[in-house]
Length: 454
Image 1 (cartoon, rainbow, N blue to C red):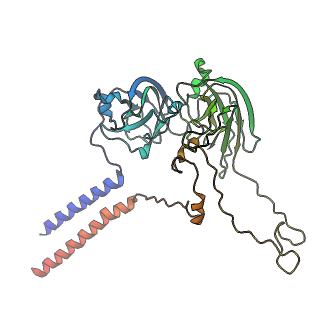
Image 2 (cartoon, one colour):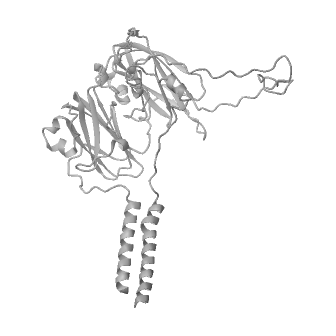
Image 3 (cartoon, helix red, strand yellow):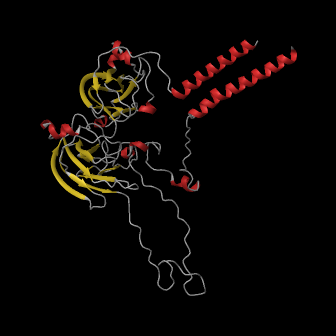
């Protein structure tokens, strides 16, 4: 009997230890199916990046999500998608893999097609969740970012969701930071916090390119791109103080003929300008900073971002029509401002502008007025900001001020909740210490009961 108890105790401890070890040290599930052998389309070492152009007719299919093996082996599915093997050499901890896909700008036709989705597979059928790495969106370019790749090879799948494309470009980077663009380029603009804004009028002829978001190096060195895009190197003298926030603002303006707005507040019927210019801010040779201009219909266009490095590239392109010139204005601030000296009234000793106490004098102070009503925002075209398009049932781009006032200003309170995974200590405690203590107590109780009975 004693041997049986001991055997059960050892087995329980072994199973509990194995479970705790798996959960604590391997929180992500392992894929049973390994990657099938395939020639590499992109091979990168740490710090390298490459971009390839492809001419391939792909037709949209919104019904099925493509898989790597399906695109590679099924001729019918291959009409809707393409698959490319990415191989990492000398994989290094702390680096990330970023994949950007460009195609003919869908907005050039004034509608939402073609639309391309991208996926990253770590097995024949297993792919990463787009909420974790991106890829499945309505944006152009589509971008996927995988931090600390855990294997040497991945399959990248490009699938057309709607419409059709005849050509596209794929840029792949394996880097450890927001690396600076190509080194050794003389800066066109040098910005220092709190300096006066730099303003420059530029005479240049730009026509609509085949692909939006031309890479800075091609704009700089390829003669065939002279009429397609302009590129400028921006150097920043960042303030490296602990509390400094190095914020850069760039404004692009140009002379355009603007069609008048139609009175009907329907989607897509707002005024448009000819020509329409776009600007893109690059933190690497191929990566565009999110939210920094590009694919907008505003006049002027503005880009604002917090600088994380000393050099960036700025490209200018025409989205619609032929441009013959434009104006650039840019400035930088570190968001550190000198504290003002408080000026006191020499008679009362109070800050100037403070009303005196009601002591029976002629001036009894100022009674603060009650807060006014929240003004209703003016109507705006739906296409002005795609990130909030549709909040007014696809007819306006405004929040309902009456509802905000009725709810007492609490309508915009953030109610999102986030959950954190349990720590390693908690897992070990619940899966190792507690089971061992319970089993030990059970063994002691059974031994005492056995002695009483026999």
